[in-house]
Image (cartoon, rainbow, N blue to C red; front, side):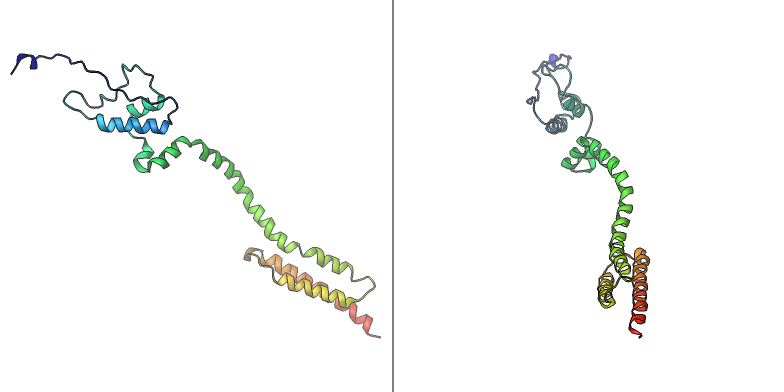
Length: 193
């Protein structure tokens, strides 16, 4: 064997560099750096492990994303999720926090809003019922009021509400019956003589 093979002489070779445009998306920079690590990061005859891609002695400026990707392994989320999903979560981590901060107070207002909507379906019919009751004492035909009350009762019978609000629906039906009794009680003395 030649003698020069046994001596340790440093070899000088040109450095290979991955260059991208300044406007390249950070996700692509990350993929390029990870691909460079995967392809050239293992040990070989002329280099140690993780010697390339190299951050030192670079003539071109290195972006922060490339530095992070070269010096670290795959990001945590990319180990378990597809690249698109992991990248989206990494870059948008603030948005779910903001959405959560907005949705938490809104979630407290949803049950009262639901209760209002359901109860308004029932209480909507108390106005016409009160109007019929107020017109009982006025001069006029109670037969028309009975027909109007029957129509109101049929429409109130078609209201559907959750079981937790059934007591209010039955209260409406009881009040309709009370007004009907009051109306029929007024009608009998007028027809008696």
